[in-house]
Amino acid sequence: MILSHKHRYIFLHCRKTAGSSISVSLARDLGPDDLQLSGLKETHQAGIAYTRRVMREALQLHDRAGAKRIEDRLHLSGMLGSERRAERARKLIHRRYKDILGDYPYHARASAIADAFPTEWREYRKFCVVRNPWDKVISDYHWRTRDTDQPPSFEQFVKAIRDGDRLGGIVPGEPDNWPLYTIDDQFAVDDVIRFEDMQVQLNAVLSDLGVAWDGWLPRAKKRKTDASGQQKNAAVYTAELADIVGQLFQREAEAFGYSEPAKLSEQ
Image 1 (cartoon, one colour):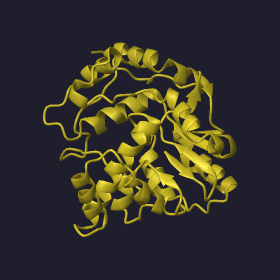
Image 2 (cartoon, one colour; image 1 turned 90 degrees about the vertical axis):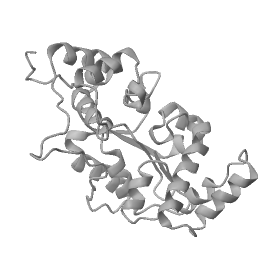
Image 3 (cartoon, rainbow, N blue to C red; image 1 turned 180 degrees about the vertical axis):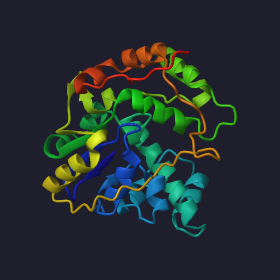
Image 4 (cartoon, rainbow, N blue to C red; image 1 turned 180 degrees about the horizontal axis):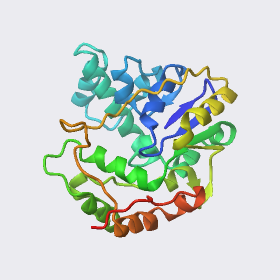
């Protein structure tokens, strides 16, 4: 999530829709009082500084013990290096906003943002990106198992989402993007950009906002491949798995006319 007072917009970060890449790109033109919660690690890696607000609010955790607060200040001073400074700021700002926006402040729900920032929610332009759920689940599977030596199969991953099984943290806590841009099942944003036409539609929104965007979208999160260049773990839909995903994300699929893959495995 990004809340920009400079350009009067709220970017709602839906999962696996290039949200981190968009956040890094937008971070280049944020004002000092703008709040960025998405893509902070990738923003630092791109050599872009956090906003003054992020750094200031990272220290506003009054429930921390005195020794811990001294340690926070030591990290944020930069005396231990820029990497540790950025990492500590990211952790602290996320912890601070968990109490305000829920367990995943970078993927905050529309209702939580509306409650936390009612004036900005009413007056600023709000936009997000959506993606075909079947493609999103495959992307999520590759990302969530990228560092796992013995990853679950794609079938296990899909069925774990259905069953509410986190698989030790591999399955995301909130896999459905629908609550991130709707309130009471109604669209709560001004612009819903399709992942499939993201460059054109995002450029149109940002142009209306007066943001001079050059179209740069870094590959913020890279997938691992094997020696042949293929994805590390196979993800193939059977009819059963495609049907499970269709049921899990039915509201989003129907709202945007998304359909299941044309080719399904016969296994």
